[in-house]
Amino acid sequence: MRNRTTARTRKGTGRAVVALVAALAAGAVAAPLAIAAASADPAATAADGDPDDLLLPTPEVPRISNSAYAGFQICGSPQGDPLVTSGSPTLAATLESVAPPGTVETTEPGPRRKVVFEVDTLAGAEVLRKQLTSDTSHDAAYQLPEGKLTDGDYRWRMRVKDGNTVSAWTAWCAFKVQRG
Image 1 (cartoon, rainbow, N blue to C red):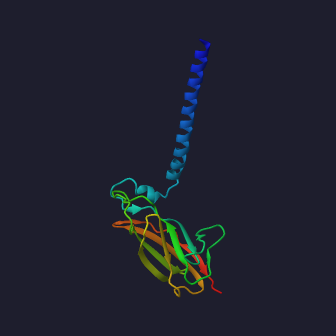
Image 2: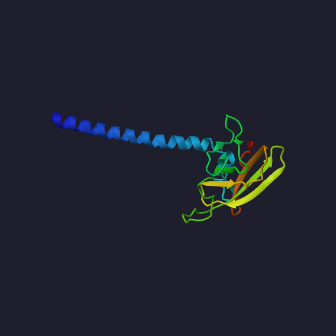
């Protein structure tokens, strides 16, 4: 009789351990999601509710590099404004990967969203405004043509359009061009 009681106790303890592990795993998954939702951009979270909202989440992690094959410098970094040593830098940002409210995201290959890039002098004079179509719903990049930028201080930003929906602009990303 004692062996059966010990076996039942072990079995019950095993079930309790499994239940505890499952609860901890669920909490580990839910906590980051709750934190992310709480710290999300208010404009992005507002777009999740009302069917009349016509906002996409603002693109994230604006970055710039010397060329299409160089490493990226992150905008707004504590190390200061990015320094570009070529006349043809690449601008990029991460787009949200979920279809806007009321639409269905497809898995078909091909162009996804229109992406608008703006480049100004640091004083605010427009240098370039370019609208492209992103090949993915995750990232957008644009390499400026050679000769558009001379040495000096600039800033750039971008936003995404999908039909009648549009994101807010990213924050301006200041950068310096210094060739030679």
